[in-house]
Image 1: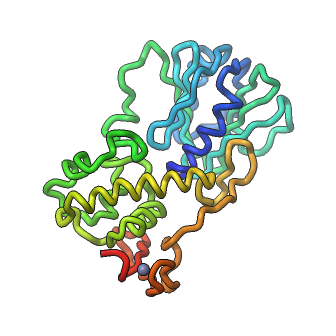
Image 2 (image 1 turned 135 degrees about the horizontal axis):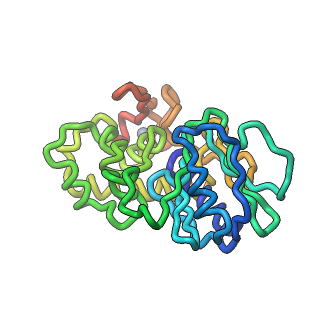
Length: 274
Ligand SMILES: [Zn+2]
């Protein structure tokens, strides 16, 4: 499943090829995705309109149209976006094709169909339910030590589960939670209520550092992730602890431990992480 850095990488890849283009036609496969595809809204608000900007909230891509509508894309487990020249042969599992006036088309391909396409029309623009209750953006200004201390008050969770809670902070999955805690020098099992200000500062800093590095690498390789130019996105950033149980820590040479926390594999260096 693509994590936040992958989605951010895709967003950045979409901008130069999509912003300023008019979507001349939307072609649908008529297969149901995780949610029904909103045919009438796609035809009414997206087809014939120009793309103004591409934003992201959590793992949703938000394509802002000149019509005032917002096209909301979620890649689910196996969703991919790729550009092709107009009329290139259709591939299996191409569910949506956005034909652009640039001579290109953007395709949404999804083998398992857990992805979703929604259109927020200007007429129904009360804050959409999908964004209700979401926590801070880890790369945004709200993700700070005071915010985390407030959210952690009276909580007994381990820090790793806390970081993976979308009500606290969005888009941090298992791989990045492990990597962030290694960089911050904090054991994944440590209870959040035992953490002081300086420790939270390290969490904030490590989160930005790990996610920025992953974005710079083009996102971590996960299953069949493909970046928005349609190339396989296999520029893997080196992971320091994730998947390295039993190997030597790159900082101190100790053996990396593996424990299962809330059913998820958790890796840490027992010497570097307290
Ligand atoms: Zn170590």
